[in-house]
Image 1 (cartoon, rainbow, N blue to C red):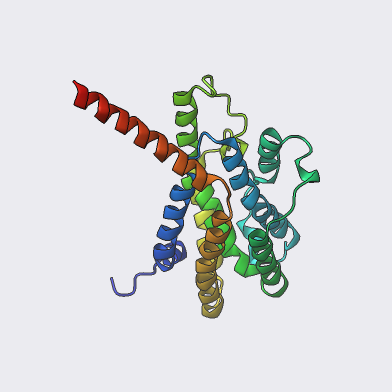
Image 2: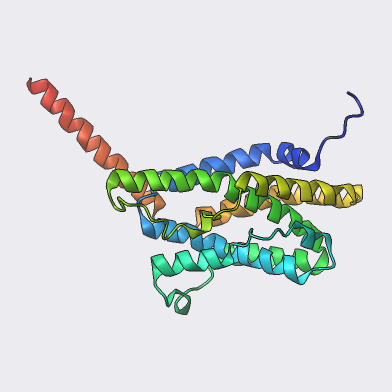
Amino acid sequence: MENEIVPFNKILRQATRDIHSVSDALVNAKLAFAFSDKDVWAEGLLVFYEIFRFLEKAMKDNNDTNLSKMFIEGMERTTAFEDDLKYYLGEDWKKTYIIRESVGKYLAHLEELEKNNPDLLIAYVYHLYMGLLSGGQILRKKRQLTQRLLRTRQDYDGIGDAVTDFGGINMRELKQQIVNNLNSIADSLDEETKTKIINESRTVFELNNEIINSIHGADYILIKKLLIVSIFALLLFIFWKRM
């Protein structure tokens, strides 16, 4: 139908399809071979901790804006991030913690948006939480499988994975509520603001890619594992030639 109204969440998905694919590829390249390495995982938590903390505070502080309408009880992750970071880095991790340059740049941009037009932060809330509820759950399952295969944590207890654990909350319903909130807010916005949110959605992934790129150790883990596989393949070849 020519006059069919396209939901705003689908407009955002279409507008970010290309850069979203780049971001997914980057996450896989950085973390796919590092599920068993707690230091790399902790770095991944660190780079996103400040971003989620900022957004959750902004949703509560700007209670007279559309941004606050994105908040849903049970979606908060700040405490979960801190619990995981305590597990991996120790109780006193904040004493030596320094915000890295890429995260500082990200936060500066968020602060500017909050100051001038808080509603544009809706793009960040939508994409980051939907990402955690979708791709984040895939990462969680892969980590569990890797840990069991390597027998690092044979009896998986969930400790250290609080960020991706939403307890008894139905994640499908939570995702749908986020989508519903976004679309409901969009219905009340003028075209200029909606266009700005669409443009900001691309910036979400650009900034995400920058902080993911700052994760140290993942490339080393990948090279190390590839080297082990190569040596194993070479030994098999030598053994086969001698038969």
